[in-house]
Length: 118
Image: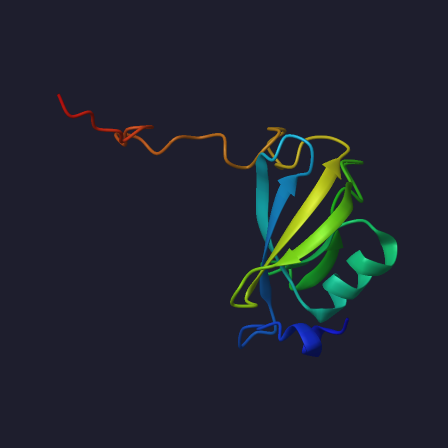
């Protein structure tokens, strides 16, 4: 199926948000951006490729660190403006060495917001 058939919505910079999730644990590992070329390379190679907004270039996740992400499946959200990559990571996703980029809780915000009624 082509990108047009899926009606993917790339932004004005030609990018689409990509949420990366561990296919086994379902932990969210990172959020990145893809352009058409990054998506094509990901589909062709089976390993995650992204567009670096800061460096303005394509990057193959794990090309220097060895922490590649084998892509099992790519899903599209209902609006067509976000991709979900289910991956088997070869190592940490975060450049800090953390398994996930989401390892820091927001200060002064409760981790649960459940209220009980007595």
